[in-house]
Length: 51
Image (cartoon, rainbow, N blue to C red; front, side, top):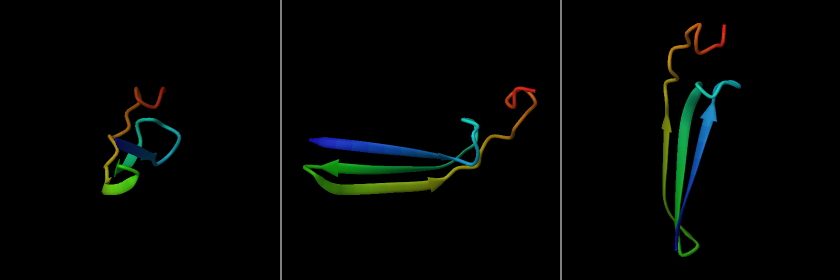
């Protein structure tokens, strides 16, 4: 069986401020691979801030 776990981190409480992502892949209960990357959050606008 293959299981993939994905984790998104945000810079603040906004869902639009994603700043990193991590992925872990498990096969037969063993860690088979990982991936991690920083993400530049989208530029905040008045609309995305709810102002």
